[in-house]
Image (cartoon, rainbow over all chains, first blue to last red; front, top):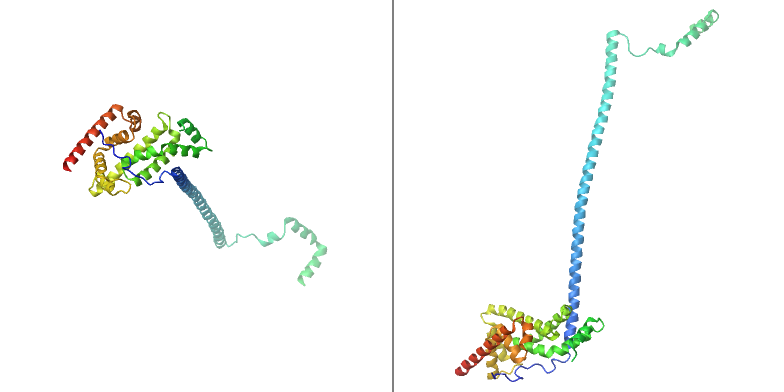
Length: 151
Length: 184
């Protein structure tokens, strides 16, 4: 087979292989830089995505926590409300008891003609005091006391 | 000529890495250029591809196991890159109802870096008529004088399969040229 063509069949620029190494190495360095930037961007994006995801998970956890707290607060509020209701009931009861007592006293007064309230005279002097007054109002003093009262 | 061991030693040292790369490029650039150029034909495409090949070589030099010579390993990367390039170009070309080979032949006629004399153009047309694998075997053997043993490593095929491909390619080219001569 003798078809091998002239070696000059394919040509190329005269200075093509001059500084060829520089050209290739410069391109390689540039590509490496771009690659590093791409990797850095990818890692950064991944980091941001991970941080976002963590934040979302935290927010969701906090939501659950807050929901629980709100639930607990609601329970406390309900308990307080019922306690206040209870207190109101107590007040009502006390008021009702007082009204009931007055009504009962009035009824008794009406039926017996005698007030259930304590006698003032009985409250003013104790037995000892009455004894003392009795002994004081002997014959000698009787006239003096009588005169002063009558005057 | 510096041997592979020395070049690798330089590349593996951070301080002399660039020097190692420079040596590697200067020792292989011309053969590599022609290996690619014979397949893609255009100088512009060859220029892009050869740079891509070297960038790939620099990036993957740590994966070189020493099963073959450094040059053979680089030719293998170049062969794979070239085949991928031609396949992707063929896919693009299929949109325009013109085969890649037809378009390459047309471009070659207008190429300022090609001596488009009648015989040269016919020979290139004959080579372009071959299937991609036969074309690769033929150009590596015929133009680059690559031994079949080395081609075995570059193309990952057996030596006997390569020899068969080469003989079939040779026969087809002869037939093509005879036919063209009769027409001429």
